[in-house]
Length: 421
Image: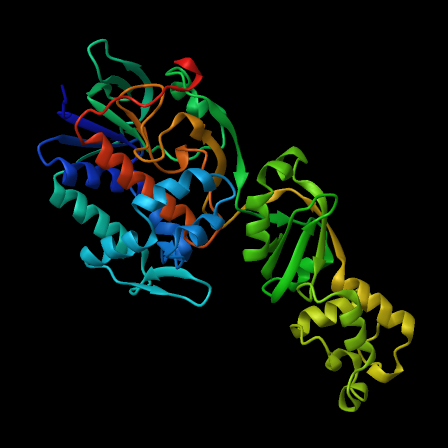
């Protein structure tokens, strides 16, 4: 006998939680859908993301292209994106009055360039769908009800649910997932992802604000590398090349204690011989210039001046007067500049974790638990994380949508339970 739920509870009023609640109401208008948020504010991450513009998704309309943006969760998301992918996200927001535009690097933002547009759209859609929102209600425990459904222990007493969608986000501390462990789920230990590199006392920090593109960044002693724009900050290095490297290398860098040697190729991987050829075969006009003005690699002027200083080359010397040894030192710095990383800094105010609920215990088509009937997951609480560029939000929209629709639908045969549970 099939059964539709009377009450669907969504824990966590972020991007995934709102999308799940809206989908649940839309799929089963007769159900009571309750959205709980532990803080007094909702959609906090939506409001601050993308520098206050909200990077909604990434312009990768095919599943094959889209999944390449996820260091963890690629296989799982292939199935999920096949059911609700990037084109579906764009269409959903358009249908709800929000047009998106695409930037040169593939990031997609609302045409208003204001994250409030996305937050207000979600709040309006939830209100119109009939979602009941309660703030200041944090879930601390959960148990399975003998007759079916779940009972949540919250800051405001017990809450009963026929179906529960957990969209509480990622957390840096494993203890935050304890109540999910008590339900029988395995938690992949959380570690930071998407962070910038701290380079204490490194002279390069004097170049704060300089961006070079393309730059290849490697973690020495590993096969981890990334190429793209690099931004020098007052604490070290950031920008897409560094952020992508931090995501793909999240667990390796965590195991290293975020202490390692960074090799920077300021030419983006042109190769030592090609760089040497350009430095030694400068045109006559360049050869007559002072070294500070020659800049045959076309780097930002402040960066070029810094590399000259590090190579011991006086900027006032003419390029033609530089000897072989000086040029070789420049070649080495341009292609293999070494820096010591000691620590990390959260990217802007955005915190992304690698880790969470083990994907082997979740059905990628419905986001339903393979352990507990009536339990679903959405967003960063899962062991899914993307690189910067809209990928984390796309995972939130997709998993939220699928979880909401499945949780509000008729009871289906329960999926095979992992670990024999």
